[in-house]
Length: 291
Image 1 (spheres, rainbow, N blue to C red):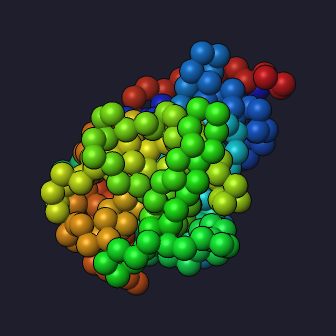
Image 2 (cartoon, rainbow, N blue to C red):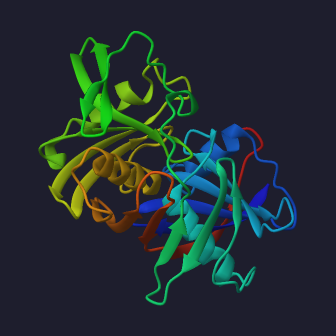
């Protein structure tokens, strides 16, 4: 199968974007994995599919597959690239779009400075909806919220980490670190991502608070490993920092791929994320039937 694609990136979080507005490509898990492979395919953290509106009042459907081929609920940096893509391809001229994801409807907006702002919806704190199994655990109260103990037990590490747990349409566990540059992301990230208390796995965030208006962040993403930026991870980290009493309502997030702006007015309010979205190149690739 020969497929046209567009390579995009948002703060270094990179994507292969597929236009399925006319017809479904019907790719398998193995074929998504092939596209994401940086040696044999195009190379990407996620594969984004643009599909027709599934219902009245919706402009498009947004489908996300991680580099491991698994479909996931949400991707914030990808949402910004999605909007840039549909405008560049003439699929829509609306400045604000309503886009259906597995996690719900989001509303991205093109900004005058060329960046994209995405209404990411309200964060979810109900542990059963994250989901997170807290049976037998005692949380550590912090300000008006809490952090949960997570036992990491592997031959290479035996430790307990206290994490803030929430969902931005996908699950996140955020821990505070003194120095994000030296944080053990590649060691602890995989252990947290696949921890048995997260039945759907989890995105592991490592947050350094620089001031009440600025943090530095690294994220080990579920199904993708560490990426240069994670939009929902940035949202989750800022929400966690605000609820822990460490951050103000508007925060600049330093990622390894660039700067994101996250705003949250408090419980019940939607999180707003603003950042770049860039087309890198376009092309065609032959996808084998059985990669």
